[in-house]
Amino acid sequence: MPSAAAAAAEAAALVRQLAAEGELSAEAAERRVKEIAAELAVRGTYRQHTRELLLGTRIAWRNNPQCIGKFYWKGLEIRDCREVGGVGGDERALFEALVEHLRLAWNGGKVRLLLSVFAPSRPDRPGPRVWNGQLIRYAGYRRGDGSVLGDPGTVALTEAVRRLGWRGRGTEYDVLPLVVQWPGRGPRWFDLPPDAVPEVPISHPEHPWFEGLGLRWHAFPTISDQVLELGGLRYPLAPFSAWYTCTEIGARNLSDTNRYDKLPAVARGMGLDTSRDRTLWRDRALLELTAAVLHSYDRAGVSIIDHHFATKQFVRHEERERKSGRGCPADWSAIVPATSGSTTPVWQRRYEPTRALPNFSPHSAPWPPDGAWPPDGA
Image 1 (cartoon, helix red, strand yellow):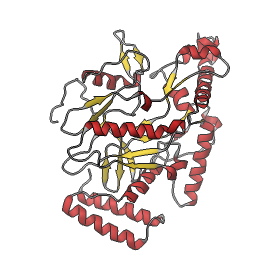
Image 2 (cartoon, rainbow, N blue to C red; image 1 turned 120 degrees about the horizontal axis):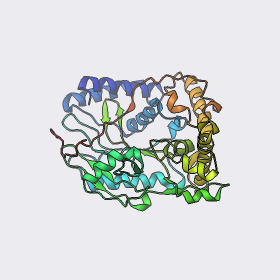
Image 3 (cartoon, rainbow, N blue to C red; image 1 turned 45 degrees about the vertical axis):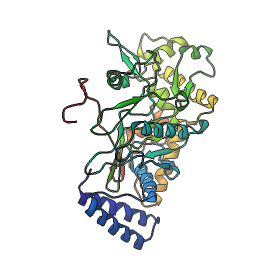
Image 4 (cartoon, rainbow, N blue to C red; image 1 turned 90 degrees about the vertical axis):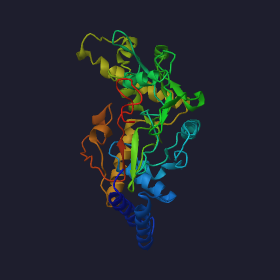
């Protein structure tokens, strides 16, 4: 957490930015700056007004260079859950609030842009957090021969929760439990109820055999390993849900060699020659897998967008920001889609991943690498 002086400077900058964007008057902004400085001087922290939390979090998303969906930043909904993660908080209550977040974001398939904000860190104690990078993720079980059943991207987390006593079913798509923790207390894990984990089985509009591959994915992402840095405060638990872009699943999660690596299976089903790269079997399989994802989500009535639509919307956002006198921080490698990047309007543009506050920053892994718990000094 920043020092009181740094927190006061960040808070003042946020309040004045809200005034500059027409959200409050200059006079009200200066009164609020003085109120915050006085509260910081006494308590070493302060409580943000609900509207500051809402508007500031939207700006934090707008400032984040990793997201392609920022065209919709004004539509982000905020759940104020700061009381849930307060002093003497209860892990079960925190878990139930996270489950409620998932149910609300799911919205019967019409996925909502939703961010829940839990208690901030204070000078005398950090706030609560979860171990999971996303609230819904599949387990990855390392086998004796070094191969992985499930998601290789979650092997470390899977091993950590198994050391805590969790036992999965041992399938490719075991949903990991949520691990919640207050500083100074041991972690607790909770299995998610099935209604909070909607999934989509993957089929293809033209290849009946595709369904036999048994592929599936959870309906929407919920990022949960980012610290919300807002007006001099740090919120270590601020899960954010949105809808998927089809390439995130088809061209990354299910295709990457360090993830599910399903392109060889798709290519075999298509009858492609996989003996050499020159046949472009990976490219053809990648396109059909991505098409299958888009088809399956549409058939299931679950919100999803394609990469052409997403990039066109991002360019519209960029142009709208320029007209408002603002830049558009973006990481080119995160904005250009994994499939057909050169066919999208962002390919020939260049972006600067500049970092401005408010924003989000990644957590470090919370689990001890050697399996000992608690780690020294906890």
